[in-house]
Amino acid sequence: MNEFLVVAGMSGAGRSQAANHLEDLGWFVIDNMPPSLIPKVAELAGPGGRVERTALVVGTGYYHDEVLDAINELKATSRRVRVLFLEAPTEVLVRRYEDTRRRHPLLGDNDSLTQAIEREREVLDQVKSEADVVIDTGDLTVHDLRSRIVDLFGDETADQLMRTTVSSFGYKHGLPRDVDLVLDCRFLPNPHWVEELRPLTGLDRPVRDYVLGQEATAEFLRRLDLLLDLLLPAYVKEGKSYLTIAMGCTGGHHRSVALAEELARRLRARGYRLSVQHRDVDR
Image (cartoon, rainbow, N blue to C red; front, side, top):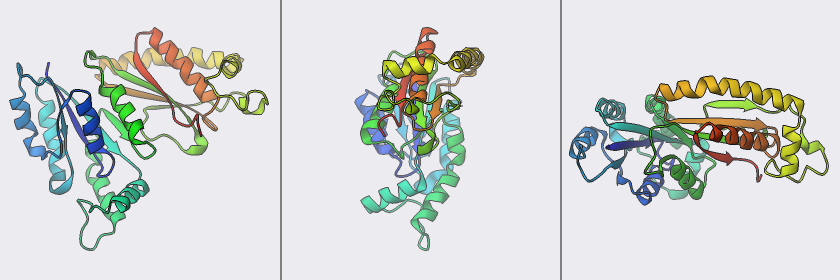
């Protein structure tokens, strides 16, 4: 079955890096592609062709208004089509452009760089809304981005099941931007105030036992199981390709990490393919 991945997103957010990682994974990648050519490429890579997985990386430039129409035309075929959207906070994109000294594709003669970035964010808002998965690269290194790409698109034998990511984070470091469900774990007793547990993390058995041993934790997980038993099959039925569940506590070291690991264990037991990430565990 021919499979297409359209890689779109903000200029400077890492589209070309994502393209390199996809190529390493065996995808046939066409970078900086005019959106109007997407349907023609789909015809050339029709059934029976040698190329089974094609990644089409589209820029913004002069044809930003063509991206959404091209994606919709490709989705109208019988092939499997997914859309990856890369974004980053404006201040991060400004810093990246200042470091590289490249010109932003939407920068007018009288514009500031910030104005050009915000204009691009506005024109790509509908494309983002159509994406199967959104990755915020603001806090990601090149290696972090590669790991995310491998987790999402690296399995050549993957079936159509939804890919699920369970992550932990600390509220004091800000909410994660690319998640679907956020669960606040700060109602539980904090291991930070237990002297022998403070230097440990939720990956260590003593912290895990402390968090999971709370009466409130058992009831929370019981109700969460019931909620996810309702939601996850419904997401799969609706064709959702990716789901990210984020567990948050104050610092992202103890409660959220232990609960993310426990939730991942329970979801794997249900047969869901997933990855686990701990954004702030080393901060």
